[in-house]
Image (cartoon, rainbow, N blue to C red):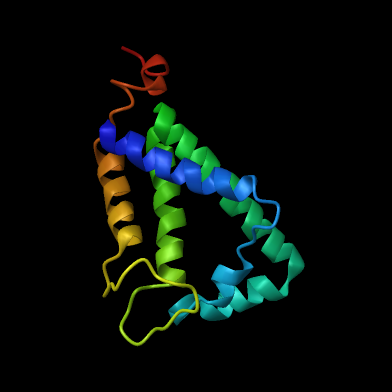
Amino acid sequence: MILRVLIGWHILYEGVSKLINPYWSSAAYLLDSKWIFSGLAKTIVSNPTLLTISDYANMWGLTIVGLCLLLGLFSRYAALGGMVFISLYYLFAPPFLGLEYARPGEGSYIIVNKNLIEVLALYVLYQFPTSHLVGLDRFLTKH
């Protein structure tokens, strides 16, 4: 339950911080993308409609996933949603040798970074849900 709440808080914070910043856009992150999704990232940035969709999906998706995990509401779906979002962040900017990014990193990683760890932690939460014990899901399940 503690892991679910901590990850929920982190994801909720990431979503809300993007929502309240009127200048936030996923464009800089996407333009700095390397590896297999760099072409897709450039396509998204070059199309204002796709960029707007990407921005709103990030802002609202993270906020909703984080809130659901924090409250223990639809937590298995939230864990899946979180895995998708964070896997995409990992794949758009993987910590592989030889890939250099313009934005400052949080450390020196090779293959394993916080995104990969959080995806695996969300997988654990998906496999072992606690929200039916401590969370709003307990009110939605039949006893």
